[in-house]
Every structure is written in structure tokens, then in C-alpha cells.
Image (cartoon, rainbow, N blue to C red; front, side):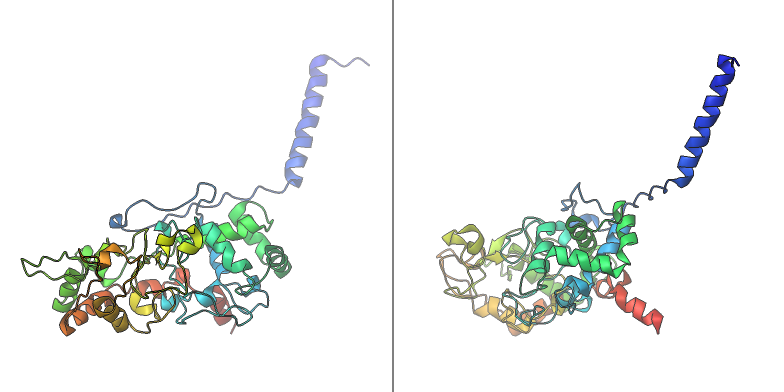
Length: 370
């Protein structure tokens, strides 16, 4: 029987529509696109932030990164996580002179705060990692820190069963890979912004420094003028600006000779011996012990060092020497030391160390299960 072209075309079109509808029904829906994460920080911190186009922050990625940050399965014997050596209550340090790896081996240097990494470009005390992603990989795979290969870490996360949907939400599929683990971790770490201390409130006009704190601020950031009788501790030369750090390396006069070469271990340059990265002083009252080797247990010892005990060496920072190339002896008075300490305590951000967005999610789960 002859079928007119128009009728035949209608039948064909109807069949194609039916097939298309059936395919749509059987096809798994595409996962929703991750939600962009809006970083919030004060304008006076500046916008020279360190992010990557290939690792944009999303709410789902940050949530996954927070969980991975506290995930003990990322260590060889399931006993420690990133959060073990970077505890929120200590502004993401751990209160030890040297952290202990999964096998009990102490680390070479003191654990650094993770506050305000969004503005950092060189990581570790010697600056050997040029990105936060490169930094994150080191403790995970170091044989004496978390101590396992990324392949083992991936296998353990896959076996856990709960991570597939989280990776799918963050990255579009449930595939767990090395890059995705690192990207999620660093997304979370970039959100660890500390900017609500009394000092911040002072900058915003919401807090009035008491007389000791104000004198301490003037000593910290001021410029000495002998003729005018103006005293200064010169701290702002290295810890300048509201974030209280700059992207430089200095020998701060701890020793005349060096067991730890510091930056020189990376560059191979003699003039870098004994130089270490200038770290933020945010929450400094919470991050004892101090210096790259944790030699000082109190802030009072730190202030005494800069006041009276700078050691001469070939690479001593110029900011710690006078015009005759001799180590500066500030000889701060008892009151000046007390004033400096009063100001340093205004850098403590209690909101930061109690913010539930940064807390251990496994603790929350355990509480709910009780």
C-alpha cells in the first residue's frame, strides 16, 4: 500500500519523539552545578588573593574539603588528620614544639597557623611550595607525617562509601582522584579567614583601644625618631599592614650559626642561611610555642628576644641592624614590653577559633548520634 510522504513523515517523527522521551527517562539527570562560594573579608586586607582558575571555590567543594581536613583515613594508620596538627582552638596550630607524625616521628619545624592563607604565595617556613595545592600534598604523602600514598588514600575513601556523592556534588562526578582531594582541601583552607579581632574592630571604629594597647600599637607600627624622643619597636618593618605579615624571608637574629639553613635549603644561596618566612601575627597569643623551631614558649620570651637578644650573623635582617651593621638592642622598658604584649593580645580573634564553619564535622556527627 502506498503511504503518502506527509503521513509517513508524521509516523517517523512520532517514533523519534517516543525514542527521545524514553532516552530522557532512562538517562541519569546531570548533577547540579556546584554553587559558587562567596569569600568575605575586609577591604583593608586587599584583593591580592591567591586563588586558581582551575580550582574555583564552591560551597560543595569547601564542605567536602572541611570533611577531608578532619578525615583520619588520609593517614596511614587512621590516627591523624590535617586537623590533628592544625587545631581550631589554637588558631590551626597544635601547641607542640614539633608535631608528631602517624609513626610518632616529630616534624622538623613548628606547625604554622593556617589563618589567612588566601593572601600567601610561598608556603612552609622556607617557602619551598609555590602554591597552596603543592603545600597540601606534602604532609599527606610524607613518610613520617600522614605517611601514605595518594592511591591508598583514594582507595580508603572509596571503601568508606559516603564520599562518592560528596565528590559528585563538588566536581560533577563521583570519581575520587588525587587532584580532587587536593582541590577540595585547599578550597576549605582558603576560607580560613581571621578578621574579627579587637584590632579589626578598632580599625573599623567599633572598639576603643585602652591606653596600654594604644601605646603598644604605636610601638609596633611606629617609626623611631631619636631627636623627637619617639620610641619604636620596629615590628611593623616585617609584620606591617593589617594582616601583620609580608611575603618576605628574614633572619631574625636567633643564632650566630645555623643548624637549620632555612630558605637557603631551597635556594642554595649563602645569603639565605637562617632566613625564614615572615608569618602572620594574627592570633599570636594562641599559637605558642614560637619561631620555626618552637624555642620560645611564651610571648614574653619573644618580646625579650627582639628587645635584648638579637644575635649577629652575616645574613641578619637589615631591619635588625643599626647604621654600623651592629645588631639593634631596643632595650625596651618593662612598661614598653607590657604595652607590646597588650597590643599583641588584641590580635586574638575568638570568633575565628569558635566558628562552626571551620570545626570538625565528625564531632558534630558523633554528638548527633548520642
